Image (spheres, rainbow, N blue to C red):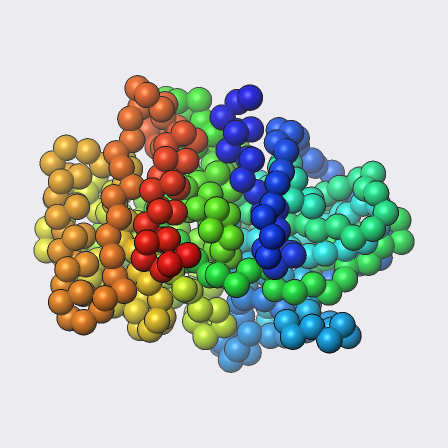
Length: 402
């Protein structure tokens, strides 16, 4: 069994069933799905979940079907997991990596109708099975997600594995086949995890063959990045706010413009006109893993400390009750690693001294290319992401009691 297959053993096995029981899956590898599919009993993108455009709605929209089962939990047709703009119910848009759409449906197959402004890759999990790979062709199309299903209810998760600069994705509808319908289901998760970071958190090059390859969207897999692995282990909904090259103070090139504190406030990473409505979704735990790019041009010094500390306060302002885990790892080494740990621990200590006991530190470790391999451009390999995920999972359990 290869590394990808091993890593895929942890999936969204209970994505639309409220994660109330343990999930067991069998890894079957990934296949590529492209092209068009036929029409069926569809539901458009009007639904409920996290997200919203405060500039026009003021709060999260709710177009879900009402429950007639007497359950106390609200029942929804479509679950949007991540930052989505749902101003137009027939054209729900997103750009951050790890954004996902989930639903329960009946029928013998399922297509998705979406429009892709760029070219993105998705993981598609049906009934909690190991995901298959969907590659979009750009533009509007209908893509088959599943065929030959047995009669009865099924679950789907469509998970974006590529990052924001690959383009905005417009979700329009799930189209069940064989006379099926999208049916209401309860909220998938009761725990909420936000992951803030750079290319490491995006899963940059984690499926690459070694440090000699550069960036390509097919080798970037957010599904197998450390934060996503930890989220599945913890049965938590994730919001990934990560962008390659960015820092708390400055980016890989040394620029201080539009760094993560700025992008963090946005619904779309590359569109400053649409602010994110933080009242639409509340994180229980926030993981902040920045610093690698801040050190790309040498020790960033006090400016970095101020920016990092400022971002901790920024997060706290949005989530008064969340646990904030400040992480270091895994690409820095030598003096830069020592200094970054010192700086981040100092920010954590300052927050604790000021009375914020819910800020903590975790060292996700330094990658070992000899033992565990390397991804593209010396980024973490799949093995390293799993090691980081194990460390993060342990730290979150210790901090939040999960």
